[in-house]
Image (cartoon, rainbow, N blue to C red; front, side, top):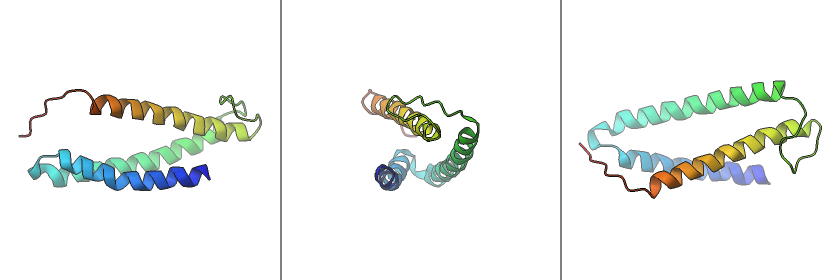
Length: 107
C-alpha cells in the first residue's frame, strides 16, 4: 500500500516539477534547460536503480531501521530507510530554497 502511495505521489510530482523548472528559465533558454532537466531525470533514475541493486547485493542483513525485523527483510528496510532520510533532506532543502529571499534577475 505504501509503495502505491509513494509511486503515485512521484508520478504526480513529475509534471509539477517540469512546469516549475520551465517557469524559472529565461524564454530563450527553455528548450536547452528542459533538455538538461530531462537528461538529468533519465540519468538519475537509471543510476539510482543500479546503485540500489548493488547495495541490495552487498549489504548485510543487519537492520538500521529501529522498526524493522532482522533478517533478509532488514536489507530492504535499510534501503527504504535511506530513501526516507534522503527525502527528508530534499524536503528541507526545497523548503530552505523556497522560503529564503533571493533576488534572481532574468537576463
